[in-house]
Every structure is written in structure tokens, then in C-alpha cells.
Image (cartoon, rainbow, N blue to C red; front, top):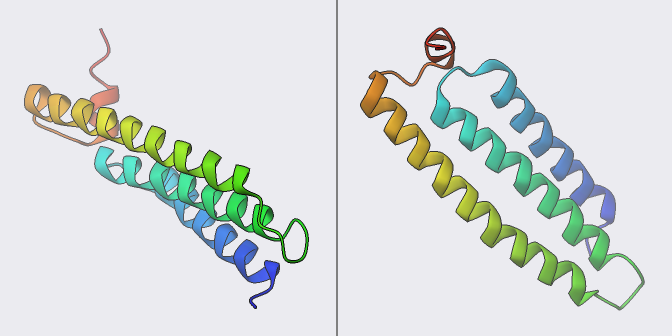
Length: 104
């Protein structure tokens, strides 16, 4: 059986990748992808902690919460991509710095 530290290390790596995407990228689609990577890091750590709560017992509450979170994150991502699509149709750019200059 794989120990808990491997799962936590995987979650930390995903979290760092997601933060890097949010901090360094200017494209709105890459920002949405970075947010999705951050959510997946939270899912990995939540499932790992629910699986290693006690030996031989897997908490079904953790799995059900993650399934609900996956469906909610999918809806939020779809809404974010719709906003990105409309921003591109209207302003012809996905660069966040250029869109920030377009304040009213």
C-alpha cells in the first residue's frame, strides 16, 4: 500500500503548479486551467486523508464530498469558459493585462 506522504507530495506538486499558472500566465484559458489544477490538488489531499483516517477503513463521506465538488467545479469551469468566450468575441483578446486596461 502506498503511504500517505506520496499522496500529500502529489497534492503539493499540483498545488505549486496551479499557483504557478495563476501567478505567471496572462491568458484567461490558462488561468482557468490553473484554478482547475488547484481544485484537483484539494481533491487528492481530501481523498488521501479520508482513506488513511484509520487502518482498513475508508470514509465514504470524503468520497461523496469530492464527487459533489467535482460536479460543482465542472459547472464553475464551464461558466468561466463561457465568460472567456464572450470576452474574446467582444474584445478580440484573452490577455488579462490588456483586458484590465479596458475599465469603464
